[in-house]
Image 1 (cartoon, rainbow, N blue to C red):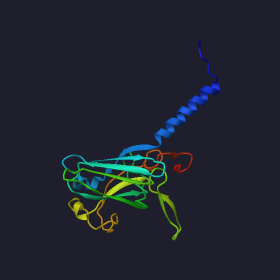
Image 2: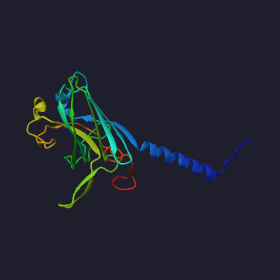
Image 3: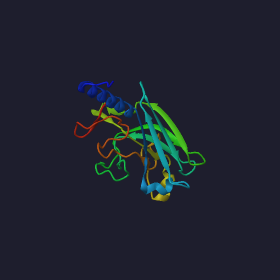
Length: 207
């Protein structure tokens, strides 16, 4: 005996399946960071360096794990979430990059071991909702959906032509950006936005 389903029932089944898949897809993300080509020679160990980030959305807060491989042994870095990235997710130049990283949020230190590897895990608000604001100056809430890390010691990038300092460590005397995530090609949002809203211009993130 054939079991017939009415059109509304079939439509409902398709909707529920799609919704279930959407929820599953928006609770976890894994992405690669892109090396700053200017300072790649000062970052690389015996092989091409890589940084894999996995974000898992939780009930009260979220978990981010970064696995760094094949950098020069014992290098130290400072991990930030930032507003803007100079790259797109395919590694190409981000034409919308305003020339600065925008709002930055210090998250953790990273210390490579003698083999040039490191793994760091942090727990905080990350997926879809990470933001900062300053009520004292009127700075509106700003999301920091990109993930990157900076050379902790400016001297570690000196052989690649770096001079001066950047504010990206606890002493505000760090080196240059080493690796960072790329903005999504379609939405322009960083990968910590797991649920983009393309119904706005520009695209926003559903909290």
